[in-house]
Length: 149
Image 1 (cartoon, one colour):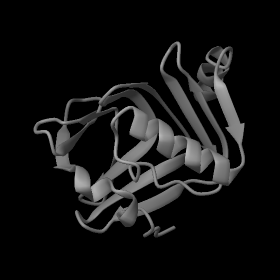
Image 2 (cartoon, rainbow, N blue to C red):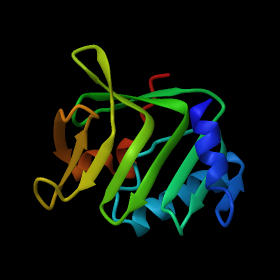
Image 3 (cartoon, rainbow, N blue to C red):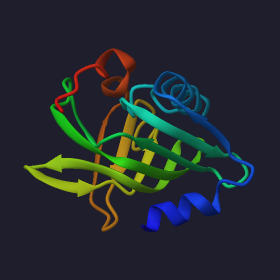
């Protein structure tokens, strides 16, 4: 699997934790540190979280994929069992394992930018350049508890 090899290349020097509660807490802290809303990744049953600060590479492994509906914007997002990205302040790039349903068709999310196109927005872009922006408030923790699968 391509993601397994990618993860393997970034484990040296990475902070790695195991167990759902500690991983969930760590993910929220890292999201906050890099100016992302804490509810952006409403993940459950997390087995492993890793973050290599030198390269900005992040990975999450869950027991199974999860579908989540952000109620305030009516957006359903699918999170695969493995998610990876490169993280920097206000920007997640080369995202794998995240898809947004657009008109019932899952579209892979490739980039996530905070404060784009405005200070109170989050912009999601696919690999082919299609994008959609939503208010940051839609991804706060209060909204993160409405799992559908």
